[in-house]
Length: 352
Image (cartoon, rainbow, N blue to C red):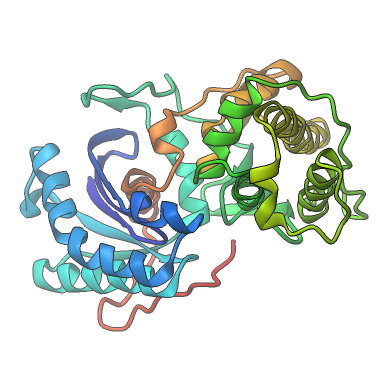
């Protein structure tokens, strides 16, 4: 069985073709990131307009890359939440139209759950991909970390899972972006903070949230602690505006603050993942989402968890159609009821 996946939840227009739930045939991503970079974050209106321009060419290119045509496609999977409403609408309406025209079953995909399924891809003839040799085994513990989500989820089987904990405020990726903007570093924040941190030392102790629910996360306090630290480093009090910090901080100060923030954020993620592993003893652990491409995070997880972790290619951590197609394949294979192509609507606030 071969599934076409369509993803348009945020600023990337993506389409992919997956066969048999593990073979990646085609994967194309058209990013509008450079349009949002001057604003330090995604502008919803700009993102939606970019999707309108890119979505049909992206789908066509993915089919060409996969050397397939509509006769070979057994179903269409599309992200219908969570995400930006305008962005989701473009992908959903496109998928609905294609499902009707070509008479294909349509599968509505939860974007956050889809990120986990990037880890189930093990084969491809496409150049430049480094995929796991085997699929994860159940029960499986998933750490989902991105700009919009931070969750620990325990899966006992496909579509059978329990959310153990999640962020109560900022997602970790959002915290990276906000700290990077505060320090005058480039968007997106994760990669730029990692580069800056490599030039500094984690010499500033920063607080971690103490929560009653042991698997929940909170990063707003850490973000505020970074603000206070930066103000202190330039000799100003809490009233000094964050927008003016970057011009007063030296490159060495930015590097040390970045290293301290990065170390604390990763320690929080790894610590709770280790705690959940020791309690639930899963057969496999996966990480998913844009922040899952972080090399420091991967290194610390591999160092501290008493289990081998097979990481997917970094290109499949950020938003992509491959993860959507893969989850769609399992919906098709497990005979889940398809969505109605005449009525499927986006759900921007969809949760797992």
